[in-house]
Amino acid sequence: NGIWDAGEPGIGGVLVRLDLNCTYGGYEITTDPNGFYSFSFTVDATIGITEQQICVTVDLSKPQNVNVLVPGEWTSLHPSSDGTAVIQTIALVDQTITVNFGWDYQFAP
Image (cartoon, rainbow, N blue to C red; front, side):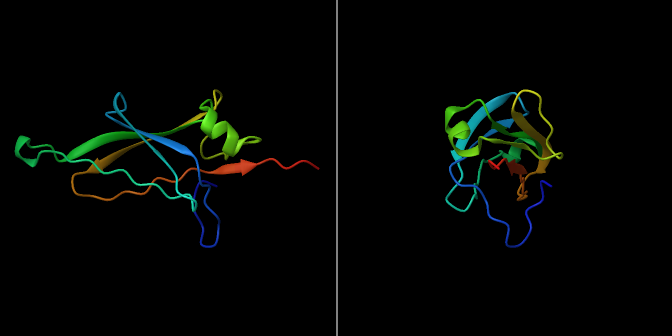
């Protein structure tokens, strides 16, 4: 459901991308064995910026992600016709935000 529930395992080895203003930045990180990841960036407070639009993306076309996630599909929270799940949000300066993705594995019968 796209919401991490207590006891629900994360998925390690997934490549996650962060773009500032959803157009530039291109920071990438791989989830740890427990499915956790963290980005940190600094906004110069002297120029008066109080918030930053960000996009956090998991692209299924990346070979690293294919190897970890396929077969399966995004949960209904992150529908995607091209295999890319994008979450857009606004982060206030000095705020920690949490972005989770939901994935349903398909198991062979």
